[in-house]
Image (tube, rainbow, N blue to C red; front, side, top):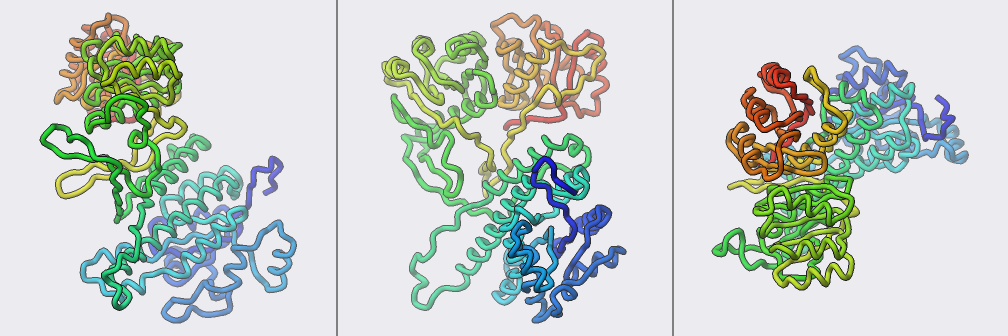
Length: 567
């Protein structure tokens, strides 16, 4: 296929497939063949494909050598790596291929020997582990990844459908952007693999007489970067191919079997959540060096344990808005959130939601703080202000409050890696909730559709609700929270609490719920307070009952298909 728009399209004519994990490989290879791709394969993979009725060429037919040494040598050959590394636009490379009868390979589909799984066994021997150190696989992955300008490399079954979606859209081609993303994931995979081998061997092999030396630095964790790239890759694919939502199996969400966390103490804290608890601030070696842990304290007392926890919650909420916004947080829940045409306006609107709870709270802005806003902040007691920057006179004004901690944050990057939560005896790890809802994502399920003004208010309320402890209910109007019900055991109780705490008029507001309504009672209760529209994920077995309740009251309701529990 020609590439008139110079998008870096490359036709995939020939693919080498050699996988240890054969999940989905038959279906993937069959789809490749239907797109006109010739399949070359090795050993057990070739047998699996042939048994499924697919036409396959053996690697030995390409190299002229049989697999040997118990499979240790099969793809380590110039006719394999030459076919991967040759630059297609380099005349000398192409001439060398012609002289040595080397066929170009356009795609490598390789996943590695299960070394990580093998060494997890308590009774594994050194010899068993060594036999699971893949040599040919990483070599092919690196060759293909190095030449991503011309070659695609696929290192996990999670990527099969992404590759096929683009190939179907481009008559069997892949774009340069796709190949470069696959290459980054490939190098990350080999880095993780080699780190696992090193980590195992350093525990089994020590130089004579030097075992007591601290010869090796800790292996830094790569899972955060790996997860980030996988999530960004998935998100980009969905942006480029809206139909992919229906064809793909889901987000890439694999978590590594082994994660090494190396914590580096940055400072000790006066105490923990309570005065009788000791505490310190640590950063994770190998993780991106930004976030609230790296915020710069411009004035005020040192940060406390609870200050850091609340400041992080405030910053994550306010940076979920593209428009100028302010969030006031108390005990990790929003006391008030608002947008505005100026930082002072957004602050005063947020404060109006619940000025009593705002006392002693944490205030976050996603824009530079000016003097007018700083003077407004000093009118009541505040623990922490966090923003991307401040005018000089604003810092001076805030500095007059000795107990007010003023933090400056790096706002150029968003936190996106994994999240860790300790439990007794272990650690929970999950990808960060970076989902953002747009107008195109919502589905109207009631007879009455939402007005444009209601949709704007619903999207605002949904963003705030995402950062409120479950069960979470948020009453709002365009650009301003009105009432927040957080952390209740019953959703209808959250509806009542949010209305009870509202100081601003509730009539004409919209309501957001972080999870579905299990019964219609939540809608019946909310309507008593004058709401006009509801946004919720949907997915309850009683959805029809809940929708009927909204229709009875003339309330518009939209489903998001996404839940935002926060514990």
